[in-house]
Amino acid sequence: MDRRIPYGIMNYAEIVEKNGYFVDKTRYIEKLETIQNPIFLRPRRFGKSLFCSMLQHYYDLRDAEKFDNLFGHTWIGQHPTGHQNKYIVLLLDFSEVQVEDGLKGTEQNFTEYCNNLLNNMRLWYPEYLSGLPHLNVHTPVATNLTNWLTYLRMSGAPPVYIIIDEYDNFVNQFITTHQDHLYQEITSGDSFLRAIYKVLKAGRRSGAVKNIFITGVLPITIDDLTSSFNIATFLTLDSSFEHMLGFTQSEVNSLLDLVYQDYMIDSCTRSQVDEVIKSQYNGYHFVDPEGEAVYNSTMLMFFLREFSEKKVIPKHLTDLNLRTDLSWVKRITSTIENTEEIVSELITTNNIAYDDDYLVSKFNKSQFFDKEYYPILLFYLGMLTKKDQFLLTLPNLNMQKIFAEYFNELYSIDVSTRYAPMMQKFIDTPDLAKLYEDYWRLYISQLPEAIFDQVNENFYRTTFYELCSRYLSTWFTWNIERSYPQGRSDLEFVGKYHEKFADLRWVIEFKYYSNTKWSRLKTSIEAFHVQEEDTRQIEGYAQGLTREYPKADIRLFVIYCIGNQGFRVFEVKKPQFR
Image 1: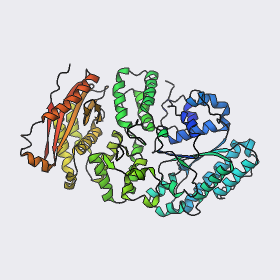
Image 2: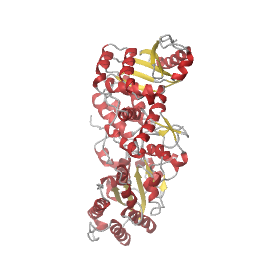
Image 3: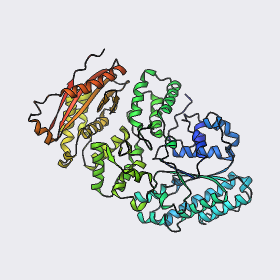
Image 4: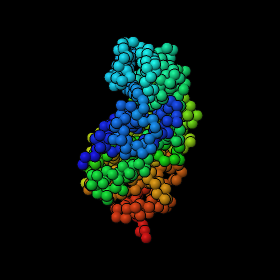
């Protein structure tokens, strides 16, 4: 198969030339042309760099002869704007700037990076820049950039389209490494960074610069640079651009249609694969919580790369690169007490309140470590997403697993090989009651007493899922809150179609009684029986599931968790549906 899954490829031309799969977002090029100096933020691994590369190849006059090859198959290729291949393009990728311990070293690296790039432009556009004297790499970038733009304007060259990728990359590193004073220096006064934005603003005023597209992750630097660059349009929370990065469901469906066809994958596997990727990589609402969610595009490509080669659901569904983002949680929350508080809240409720005014307004470094801004920062980092107008939530199983792992780390809970015997026993003889008993004995027994003031069914469900996924992901995938006409199931074990438990589907409903509520029932755990309303609830899920998978081996369980006292597991007989 010649067609490739472009995981990790950030060059648009390379994807086209290597016949890589491409979800067409080119219609947004036309929309962006109506916006002056757009700034668009998205979390890491949402395809920002690839989008910047696409803009570069569309506007770069050097690619005029390649236009049909690069864009003929796209929407913009069929509907060109008239600005294609008309400009000199200057793409600045600030993630390439090496951050040093001191500001002087960082400024030197920034200066050398930008000045070398400006000098290289003489080679790339010789018809317009060959007469420009060589720029001294040690001269301040603002000075060289001013001279460079002035030369182009005076010589009658086309305007410059400027793209800044990862505008906040090295600035963010100052924050995560506790070098707050360096952040303050680089974003205030006459710093080298502010000087650049002043030059860009002047270039827009003179006409030397056609437009400026800026992307990054966090909005804090924008506010601190506003006085130097107050001509920007903040598009991040504009509903008409919500789906510019990230894949919609229809885009994913079309992509999978092609992958299945090209790699000749059995179509009978499609429904389970659809389930897996939706639960793992979908769920991001950046603007409208009632609108269509988007998939993390890079994570989906991570999955498809292995799936297309082996035609089986991979064992590991989480890209290790995502776990590195947890360093932000530690830095944002400042103290271990704050960190434990926010992580515990997410594990127990999967919700956290936010103030929409904070989300839509700019904020700066002085507010960065205020407690009320924790949810906002986690939203921009892609760890939380909108549930409604009042609550943020973890978007998918990928993020739930990462936070459950972090919870275990914070509370020093052992999730190592001590669990191997119980998991092996389960694989030999699947017994959910025994598996949960071992989880309670080995895992729950480690929890500090204070945790039980916070726990609920979501806590037990999430930590049980995370532990099982560590050991059983060779054979199973899981669903949390899968939708049915009768509601959402708590947790489902799904046997992988290519493993020994194919067609097995266990639906689990968790119910929680606090110690206080339990005491009012005046009964013992041993004498407790499954409640009729809980039976009806889980039978409703089974009805919907049976219609989708009539041949599946469906079993139903209700698990009652009583504070820190104990539990009961009941299997509910699946009714016969007509």
